[in-house]
Amino acid sequence: MKRILALLLIASLRFSAFAQAPDCLLFGVLKDMSTSERLRGVAVEAVDMKWGRHAAAFANDSGKYEMNLGRNGEWLVSYSASGYLTKRIKLVLTGPAPEDWIGGFGMNVDMALMKPKSGVDYAALDEPFGICRYNGESGNFEWDMAYTQKMRDLQADLLKAHAEP
Image 1 (tube, rainbow, N blue to C red):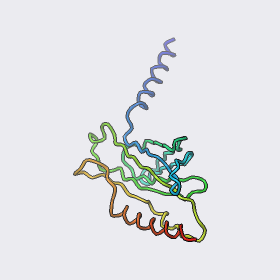
Image 2 (cartoon, rainbow, N blue to C red):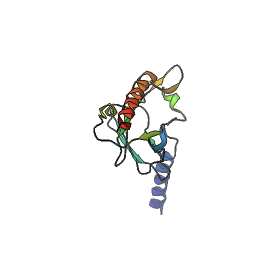
Image 3 (cartoon, rainbow, N blue to C red):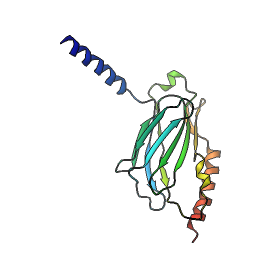
Image 4 (cartoon, one colour):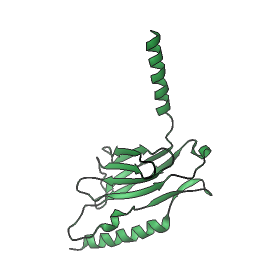
């Protein structure tokens, strides 16, 4: 009996550790770029380029996903689905002091994926579409808007080439 109680205590401690708020919760909605329909089953995979950790999730029937990336690290997050081009973002989760992690951070990243068209060069999508870093002055993670604008311009060029007959 004592052994069963000890096992239950250990199991409850493990469960309570997992029930805590995530350090960095990445979530969002995935859509088809041309139709704006929500995409289900999109694979969201994250690889920590610094520590070698992995995280994965799939979009549910509403096109929503979420995953906990933990603290620190330099995550390359890929969004991919059969019949669509893969897009990536980079999240640099270094910088916050331990006390700044209390309560965690949430990052809402919605993504629109497009279907490939023959004859269009999609090499620009090999690079992350956006890069997010911690800003110590604001106490938040913020997108590098100059980089993101460059990638938006490249995507606009891709969309023009994609629309041509």
